[in-house]
Image 1 (cartoon, rainbow, N blue to C red):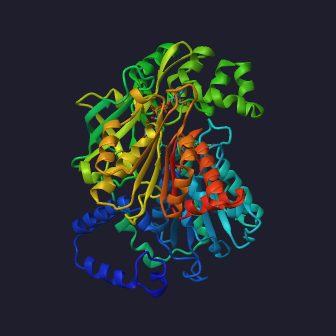
Image 2: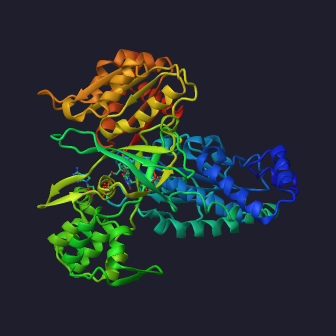
Image 3: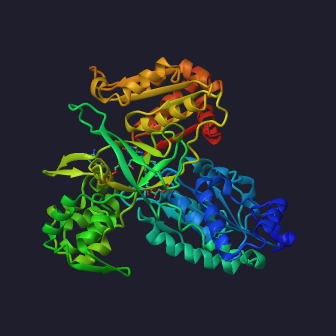
Length: 602
Ligand SMILES: Cc1cc2nc3c(=O)[nH]c(=O)nc-3n(C[C@H](O)[C@H](O)[C@H](O)COP(=O)(O)OP(=O)(O)OC[C@H]3O[C@@H](n4cnc5c(N)ncnc54)[C@H](O)[C@@H]3O)c2cc1C
Ligand SMILES: Cc1cc2nc3c(=O)[nH]c(=O)nc-3n(C[C@H](O)[C@H](O)[C@H](O)COP(=O)(O)O)c2cc1C
């Protein structure tokens, strides 16, 4: 295989590497080529960030336009779709590059010919952390005219949030307002993002094929790429991990049941880095499946066909459909079935804010009980959302635990509407017995990484189960002999029953592996104390660590903790850094841009 210079410009390889590859492939038989492609796919799963192809519209030359796929992702969903599109585009012989929003060179926007943006919404209608810079730039007055640009937006979100797919919607409107031409209509994907996302990818690929000339010689790589990956475990092909340990780590009288879970990744080939999460495909609680069937007077053994698959209804409800989370589309169909004026009023656009808490608190069963209606098995399966995996921050370093992976699991178990409610994945994981296996995969998180320079200090703010990645961080830094200092802020309700991993932290302090530990137990005194208060109290010292180049990490609750911690940090920068509020915002934005302020919040 010899490539022309024009094609070299589009490949993710230097000329030197490409000629090495040519000589390596020379004379290999089909079996060896297949093995090699699978091996490369395995490496790709471990090193997604390094795989980005970075020809620019300029370097590729005006006569060989390329497709830029840019994704803004907090938990990997948009990234999965973007990577899939890139693979398909490459296999079609298109020149393509894949970039996350945080690494997109803004100055290249005005040269861009075809841009596909796949982006989720976080917080309360906010962009993913990584996309803040791009979104701010595009919405600002500095954004260039984009008459040369053809674009399309795929928005990911969760219809139970009032600002559903807000970031995608805003960007789609803004790009059009800047003069760019919509190649495709925007699609807003709900949590089962593959349902509407995959058809969009096909349309996007077809549109790109029409707009860009395929590069013939690149197309010849197609076979090599398309046979990859069958042996690699991932989101669509999870590894069934054995449970090695599952232990409650909160006291018996604690309100919260938090578990330390150890799983075996032996023989899976799966590896992870501190900061990554483990994806878990749950089974719904069998008790809840039975209650649903009884309430609807349906027989679980009846087979139901949907999208070309035929399964007993109980299996659809047990492992294929979301029944612990309520979604707006299901509620809308149910309102029609039940003929309920109250539900229809709640679903009206004017009631969006009023509906949000119900979507959070109600499970499907509560709706069926409160507004009874008849459903057939077929309708039910078609209306419920596809079950989606849950993510758990990994709480171990492989340098210490080898092929194990540890999690810190907060179980969702509460009384509401007169009955017990449990979360699908937390209940599934917490009730797996010794012989149980959990279908898992590793979800890399390149934005939440320890500093490459191990002499840098780190500040870790992780109340509740937010502690998980910091256990991994401290294990890793100890194993590699990092010389930078480690400072942990932890909080919970009570010291006596909820100080997660207390003995480990005390031991780490004694051994000099943890240098500072600040604790906030909110309910041990009359006045509530949270980690953000501890941060403020230590403001001068926090500022001095930051000025000294420390990296700052926040993990845990996204609703209250993360915004409160952000506000406390802002105050610290104003007070101890002597900055105006605007400059403090810029300071924190710069830290974030430099990957020195990373958040993993949920
Ligand atoms: C990047 C990332 C990392 C994460 N890391 C961790 C981690 O380390 N540890 C961890 O425990 N979790 C972690 N999570 C959260 C985890 O992914 C699940 O969301 C969580 O375990 C709940 O899932 P579930 O399937 O048990 O509950 P679900 O079945 O998803 O939820 C059940 C229902 O209960 C509702 N609900 C939940 N809590 C309450 C409550 N207290 N009162 C009333 N209603 C409630 C929900 O709105 C939902 O409708 C992480 C999430 C992300 C995105
Ligand atoms: C803490 C948190 C806040 C979220 N806020 C919103 C929101 O305001 N609007 C929305 O449509 N989706 C919201 N979502 C849902 C995500 O957009 C959805 O899970 C999406 O699939 C994530 O894609 P990503 O992994 O590419 O980030 C939120 C999710 C989380 C975890």
